[in-house]
Image (spheres, rainbow, N blue to C red):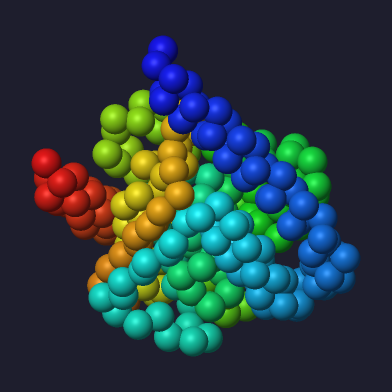
Length: 252
C-alpha cells in the first residue's frame, strides 16, 4: 500500500469516527429539550424543529453541502407521502433538511436498539418489522393516525439499503403507495444522488462535499383506486431510477 493511500485511510477513519461522535454528542446535548417535546404527541412539530437542527449540525459538521432542487413547491401544513431512494445513513439528515413540513419516518424496528438515539427514535417514528405481519399491520394503523392529524410521512420504499452498492435502485414495497391512495395524499418522489458516494456503509469510503437532492413533480392520487397501487409504485420507481441513471451516464 502506498503512503498516500495509507494516509487517506487514516483520514477517512478519523472522519468516520467523528460522525459517530458528532451524532451522539449532538443528540445528548439536545436531549433535555427533546425529552420535553416528545412527552406529548401534540408537540411533535416542536420535536421536528429540533430534529431539523440536529440534522443540519451533522450535515455541515461532516462537511456536507446540501443542494436541493424542487420541481414543485412543498406547501406548508399540507400532508404528503415522501418516497426517497435509500443508500446511506445521511439520507435521514438530508430528508429532514429539505422540508419544513413536519413528517414522521416509517423505519426499521431494529434501530430502536441503538443507545440514546434508539430511545428517541422509538418515541417519534413509526417502527415496523417487515418480516412480521402483525408489526406491518400496526405500523399501517399508526401511519393512518398520523396522516389524519395532518402530518406527512416519509417511507423509503426500498425498505432497506441494498447490500450490493452497485444496485442503482432496489425494488419497491407497496405500503407507501397504498396509503397515499387511501388518503388522497400526493406521492412525492425524491432522488438523492450523492449520499452513497459521500457516506456509504463501506467504512473506508466517502468524503465531504456536495450532496444533491431533487424533489420531483408530485404524483396526484385523487380518484385513484387501491387496485392502481402497483401502477403508482412502478411510476415512482421509474422516475427515480431514470434520474439516477441519467446522472450516472452524464459523468461517464
